[in-house]
Length: 212
Image (cartoon, rainbow, N blue to C red; front, side, top):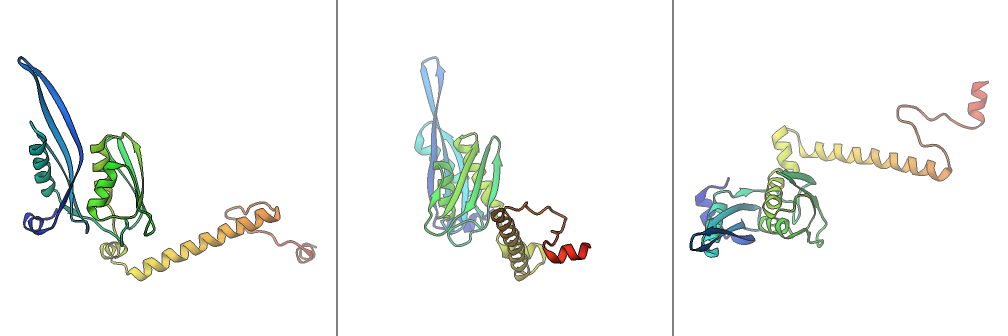
């Protein structure tokens, strides 16, 4: 978490995700209470979520903002999007986060969008599965952002150079591309697809002469 001194020096923006009203029946009538779910961030990779309850809406929002300041964390970004695809779960809600090209925007619902915007994400594709509860979706998005890692962070954790990771990834993509092209060419020619673990036999006069 970000320490309190650093949090006080940051230029933070707060976004109210949801205001919920509850009622309790008393002897003299109904007594109302309010709860607020707020996301706090600087738009540059720092984000936090807070929850507060009070008899009125403004005190509930103030409590939620104070709670969010205690739970600020730094998340990884690559430009204006997330470093890689990830799936996060909180209770019965599940959120998928996918990187997107610049100019795509944030394709998400209100709760997921608020958390991403507060963190500084401007381009991302998302999909919410399971419960559509705003608090569960917001916390699932928050957990997904916390789990993100860039190539340099992974290389520092594993002690592997970034160039080696990129070269291995490019080689695996090239092999997959060649395999797909081979399957497509066989499909166009009307031949059967290659079977994994076996070599395709040569066809033509050379193979017939070799067999004789």
